[in-house]
Image 1 (tube, one colour):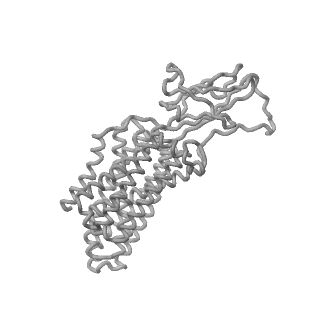
Image 2 (cartoon, rainbow, N blue to C red):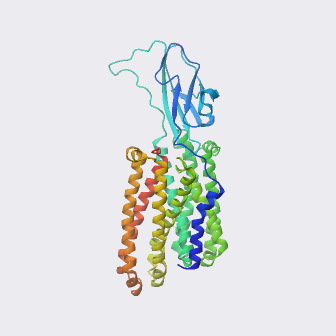
Image 3 (cartoon, rainbow, N blue to C red):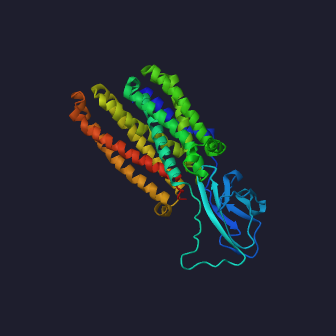
Length: 448
């Protein structure tokens, strides 16, 4: 490994430690959930209550709590008395009937990651109304929940965002560490341009979808300017806005590379700029996940940063190798680039596994939660697919050890390189599945 390569890799590894020195996140619990209601759900009351008190498992902002009647009318919400829960409790003014049934639906947005939780509370005032026994009675309205279309859209843009981040960060790292001359290759330039465009569009679309998701609205709500304005006043919205600005700055880094080519990729100034943008993109991506939920949020955040960094180096480098290096079939490039990427991939896999173990324990918290919660089961699915990816990566590594020299001697002969191309293609396809499961994990309730 050359001295410039060692120095640049050292800078990549140093960034999580710099983050820990800059500042640590505050401890956070899982998604905000309702702990109790007074009067409680299902209560039979002689007199109509003037208000309803909702107590959550963590402090909430009044702007993040919505309480509606079953007809869709929004009810006033104020802070409850300090003795009744402090910042975790809210008071809902009711216009209750003298008798009959009263039902309200509530929703709250987690101020850390923007996840929406919701439920329904039903009360009976006076004599309970007679209920039909033949199925003719009116069924209770279900608790509100985010629109399935909005949820699917949010998962899709997060998948596109993760892929764009990996291709951009990993692609820049590949050119910086292993293949500076590749900055002049049209395929590599097109791949980076596509990654930047997808990353920016996915982030902007994610703001609208996040707003529609937390407001329990539909897809049309994701296109309204008011939705964007509402989201940008929340902590998750500020993070998304910061990520959007970082993608704009990433255009400056990419533009300098496209103009300067190989000369720019070797420039210390350009590398410092690329590292700064990389740090920002990785950190803001991790801030909308579950990494801070647990007893050690600082280590969770650092582990998430390391996880994203090495996953990007692995996936982005893999895409560069498959789409830009191998199609050229130049013996000198194969001899110089492929062994270097093989070593980088091995280091990246070790970093991904180590950081992933820390994150799994931080977020899931127990073996029971791993096996018996939807979050834990998704995590097991991701681990299983990742195992298949590692098998394909092992086949690629074996080719490098046993057949790379022959491929170089035959000047990149198609038949010789084909098996390596197949294993790289399989590895790339499985990685896309891993990213899809990761996108589902972000919107799922943590196992803890």
